[in-house]
Length: 348
Image 1 (cartoon, rainbow, N blue to C red):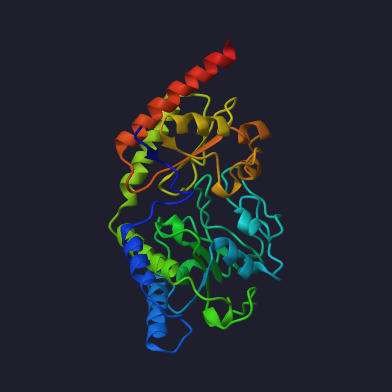
Image 2 (image 1 turned 60 degrees about the vertical axis):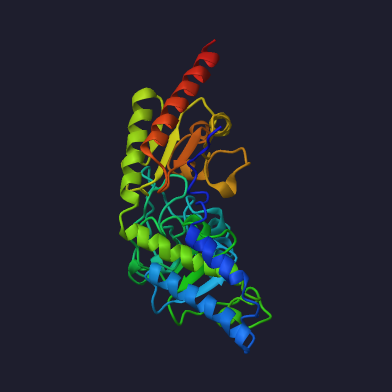
């Protein structure tokens, strides 16, 4: 059976540029902290990747601290800081903040004190984009990086989280980006790596892959690769809306990522939809990948005012640059057919 991958917000397929950079890095023998030629070669690969990420992220002049992913980056940024946040934040940030900020029905968050707040750029489940205020303490930009024309230096945020695998890099590598001179207390101690802020021998191959993926993603973004993706998302949205009057299209009236569709169909659990579509050859999600396997209502949708029953019936479809119009039309046809069967069984 031919598979159609529509779960880019969970992880994007590895880019060939990242694969090539990683294969080359695997041949580097030296430890990046060693001063001999082999060590300097490994260190040069890291610094090349750091420069690539900084340029792609519009963070020239900022510090790029490589971590094992955005989750570790969030811990590094938030530890010891009494930050406020909203219920829509990813679990990696929500674990550290006071979830007291109000969320509107449109998924947008109101901030009273940006200097003491964390606010994501774009939500992984709904795709809804926030306006980041100047002086914001922290922003999770993992979903926006590579999909939106953003520049850290102009974002207004003091710190940002990013992750390689969301834009076609390897899994298990991310970064905390901070304004130069920002005081960060190391959580992993024992070495002077990453400017003394994150001890441990660097994952040279993953870092090289991150740099190559970031550069490729920035190039593709500039070439307009996400414009047809947004068109296909809108085509899918219209097909679902026409075929299922019961389905709620979450965030339709709000600014969203160009690739994301969150749809709630009351009476049909999200996990059941995911399994049905998987058997039909489509990879989709019931929400954030980091919350998968937990049978509970989406806290993001609850914060937006949906009922618990509605929030358990969400399906997220997230497209990518390789998605075609045929892919989304086939998905709509199959999903609508399965919805009709499910509704008929329940009626019987």
